[in-house]
Length: 401
Picture: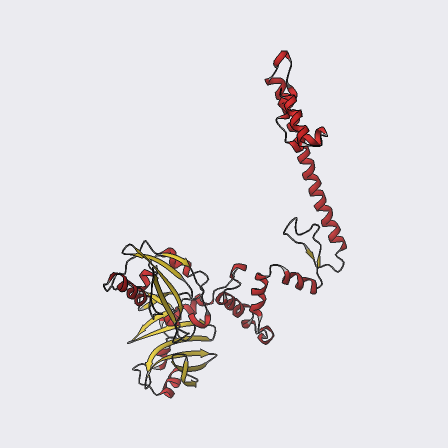
């Protein structure tokens, strides 16, 4: 298996992080664990709709991340090259290798993370943009426990099990209530609750060779380190460019609203405010400001400038008058500066004419012709009160002859 860094890998589209997918029941499938020390692997996300280009054997391949057709909670991978396109595969390796085999007639074993650029620091940095928490892949006994959430009094992890059939066990702690859900595809087959990790696993009746606390993973040194240093509780901010990113906005909502015990039933469609706002330019904020008693005191039309000025004063008349006066003063000052510049140009040209051209044809000084060359038709028309460009051309020709 080739696990090197490919120089031909290009990230064409970063894709997006979705909480219900990247931190949902099948979070382990939406992240690629990267090797590290102490039986812990940090991870890089397969962002939904991310798009990669790579050249293999002098041929370009395109790989895209989609949702799996059989289980929408899991990722799927499609590879295309020329007229050949793979089916939706469970891994990027399977998608690329299948198309490669069709084109070149031989089997390969390209590493999925490598062909997606996960060994390229620049690509990884872009894929981690806006990511607050990277799931931990913990090797505990014979099991790989994936921790996908570490928050104040909330914890989520998963482990693969077999309870009459292969299932995924989603383990949660929510304010000292331990829950255990067994998933088969998108369906929950069994659900258990208890006041302890050992108790909830005892209800499940599965011999796992490890106790419940170990299977949950919250006692693992890496998890304890994060809890003690508050690394998972970092402060989240964004710009208007991220308003349509559900993962980032959910984190900010969780941080600023939910944790402050603000009634969220009044804010069921809060996401639509930001999405509609960014799509409809300034109409929403204008409506909100007007409805909240603010007044538009912009002293010019929108066709002149994009900036707007609003006042929250009960009587905005004075604010509007003062702003208008400042705006007119700025314009008059700019006009005076412009006129001063033209006047300086005229007299500098006059002086240059005297110094450079002391005697022209027939022993006469051709001052006017030299000055005329320093001005535009518009300036000459205004200063000399000539009404058309034709007259200006004739005048210029006369002065330069």
